[in-house]
Image (cartoon, rainbow, N blue to C red):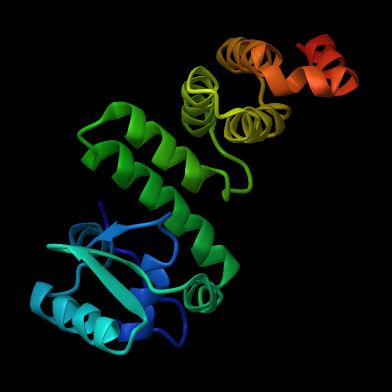
Length: 194
């Protein structure tokens, strides 16, 4: 994976590293940040340890950190320009798929990143659909419908047999979720488009 390019005004400083980390849902690994930023491990470890001392981060385990509060996380996230943020979400999704041991967790973590991408390609839509299926099977309807809805939205302008089949599969998954029954007009409208 190619390293992320710092946006104008950023460098491999503490704010750059923390801004990248802010895009992860929940905990993040120093290895993930290292993979994305290609910063020296000792430099990164020192930055993250200092952020813990400053109460910006909490150390959860060896090499695992999280933000101390959501306000700091949001503040760091806002440092990233929108055009760079979308590219980072794509890279993090790819990292989640390639690095995770548990395939279900990898798919759901990747989908959490792809939700923020403006117009996913077919592979991204496939991941969103797969995550929707996994969330639905676990009874997590709101997350399932969020993933299905994003995939449906992004597939609307795609053409070709693969896109059509994925659109139908995603719409069927959406319609099977128990919460979709609460909005029958929306569900029927989407089914008609399929």
